[in-house]
Length: 167
Image (tube, rainbow, N blue to C red; front, side, top):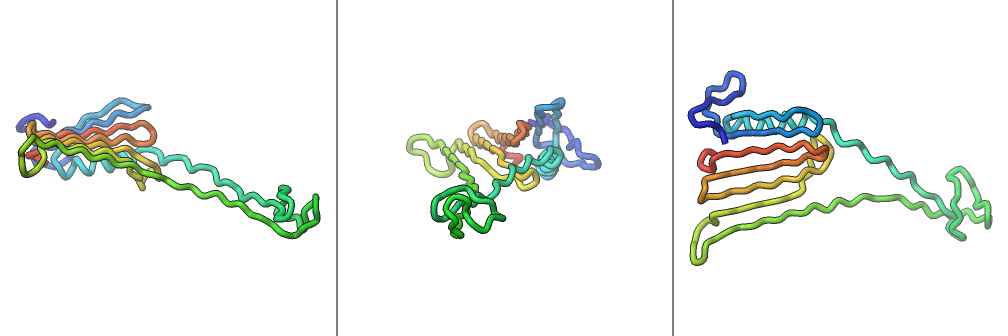
């Protein structure tokens, strides 16, 4: 978390630093910033946008087969070389993405109101990188702590911590 009574490190900002953001890169030196809430969000966007977009998977060509005997047939061939049929079956591949989400809430026995602890872990699509990311958030009301960890597809890890009361 940000050091007490420190100012946001964002150029020109005089707000108190309430968040500590750490970026661990697989191919570069780690960085740590002490920022206000608004600039904490901005630095996470900048870190994400600074990484290379995920490579585009190669497109799978459509497969053409004879509709009669199943022989592979060229798209330019008018007839099947094996049986002479003009019927065709064209197979086109599709991709389906399944995302997971897990939520946990901790309440003390007999307690009412908000849980003292919450955690959430989820897969998320990052548009700036055209790739999946993993996000984990912990909220601990007893310890007044908030932590968010974002792991990008390339291994870059962004961790933001703060006092929950500053969040």
